[in-house]
Length: 201
Image (cartoon, rainbow, N blue to C red; front, top):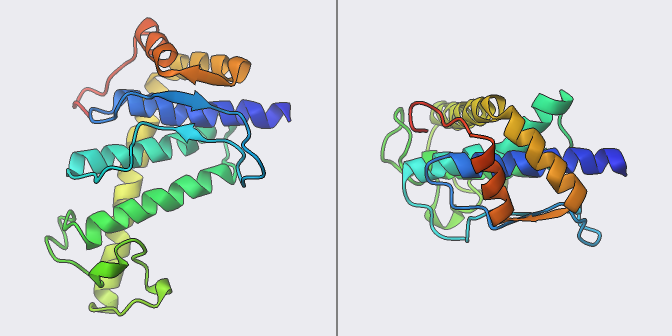
């Protein structure tokens, strides 16, 4: 319905705007809110990430902020979130968990891998994986994952709050046209003088 379309437009614009602003975000190619078949959400976000292996910590952090951008936009505009945001959170949690367990990117735990390598896609104990670490370590892992999510949620929020005008313009155009190109996104971002976070993040 009309209300859902309005929400989806903001959700996708949130991802898009964060992707345009974080330093390692690749340019957005296309954004669409056209429902696709009987999919759970019925729309796709064509984000710039071409399933490449994301290497640096900065890239992965930016990726988390981008993934959380849709959720943050919903929180800012509607004061709550839809089920559409839970898939993003799941993907963000997977990345954060890889950063902590597989890639040694946690200051607390350092460069050790936790859990078996071949399980790297699904790192949770819920997948019946053999644990080679203690409950205490499991708790630290969860805390570190949560910290990564919270930090990047805050970054996405800062970006969208400071660029609220751009977010509104993007969402309005997307709602009207249903599909917008990367060029159109770039034009809006350039025209509405986007505020970049001062620490270069």
